Length: 232
Image 1 (cartoon, rainbow, N blue to C red):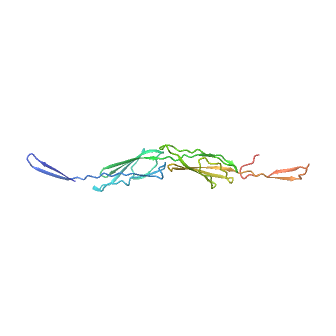
Image 2 (tube, rainbow, N blue to C red):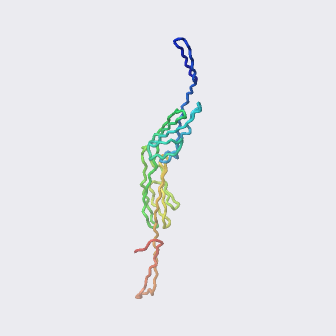
Image 3 (cartoon, helix red, strand yellow):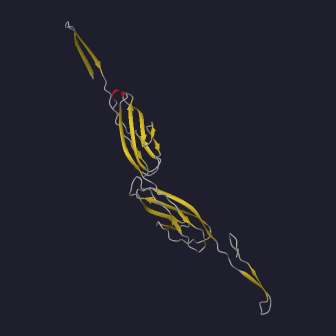
């Protein structure tokens, strides 16, 4: 723009000054947040879609992020929110001419299922009972729930209920049991534990001597067990 200033003195002498003025444009702030599923996982944040017209060779030179209680001056990055809940996210972009724009929004970080289960070691051929102690936080959504469960018993068999039915293993050994759960917001977590199935003792004995009435007969135990000891 050209700004013109016309002056006239008390003696009717005129003077004119013309000065060019550049009005620099404001930027348009735009923030992008992405994650696998809005769960308690790292978020990718980016302000690179912010823009400004090139009038006066304008360009965005500064980014100021407000990520809950944290800040960042990067144009993009990765942020871990400390826990599930509601968070205010804001971005201020500033140009090389100190013109700025602000954008903000509130996001919901949903909880991961909190998983736990207990199981006691048992002998071969006896069913093992798995007791789940799983739960999920109702912050920030009161309707949060665990929608599905998957048990992996470690012997190529699986279950899909909260309360696992008793499970009988085919052989004596140590198995790794995994429980995974998915919430109604598609947040997934898993936990694993080992459980030992004890072998059964092999009972056997031999007889020596003449097993006739009145004769002394000797019985010799040849019992065995693949691991552990036989005590009675």
